[in-house]
Length: 190
Image (cartoon, rainbow, N blue to C red):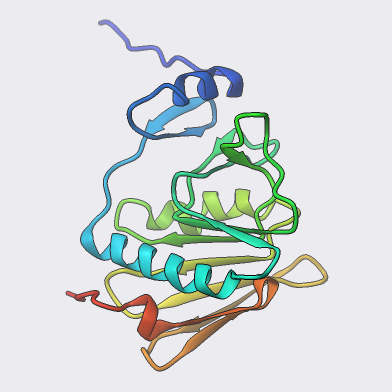
């Protein structure tokens, strides 16, 4: 019986391949994992959230990046592409290509059936290893729900949730407010 051995890549090998690729892949524990396309709701939530945050960051020393900005998580073997990432202060990139951020302040992921358990579990555990990360948002696309995790001064993470369109999330680390009505604009729930 023939077996298909896995080929493991170093981070440098991954980056060399990824920078030439026609489609995006995340790097997880030495393997390249192709990213799938997103649903209408996923796209609307992502663009709505990016619009709201970008508008509020005008004139502030922060920058927001779309899902094309890769993040390096030190000592984990993970290079994810968050749906939205914000950095305050001087962005620090892994190298001169300026396409892999190492010091995010806020990471936002829009949940989907195929990624929800990973975004909540292993990926969040890895994100928490980034010293600069102050807030993590998980936004549902099948119901009105945003989970907001905030790093506390003792290193613990505090969760708060909002579930209705008249509620909002205060992103204190970047001095922004997200209104759920704006996040879910034009989104049709099942």
